[in-house]
Length: 96
Image (tube, rainbow, N blue to C red; front, side, top):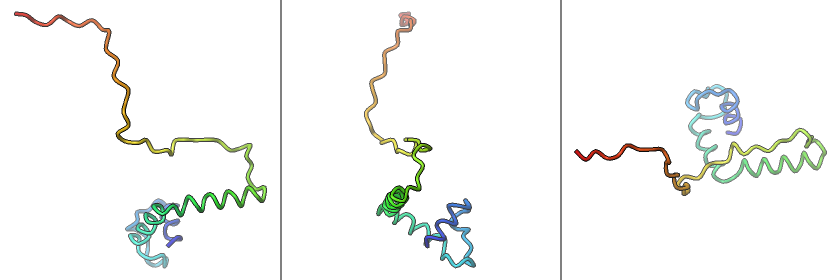
């Protein structure tokens, strides 16, 4: 399953287009497994373990690292600040 997931993510093909001949299983099964593993936090744990192992071995060049928050999800329903009232001149209401 993991090879099928990585193949789809690397090549960019659709899940339903995953060739059965490669032996990775069906694309929908791979997609469901990816969804379940993502929900369970498997990839976050794998990322942390890999970083820890590489850092312990001195294999990470931290001088080339950067911080990027573009992947942080914006929460829906967060209260927004009130709109500032316009100071633009407005025509008087029509009284005729």
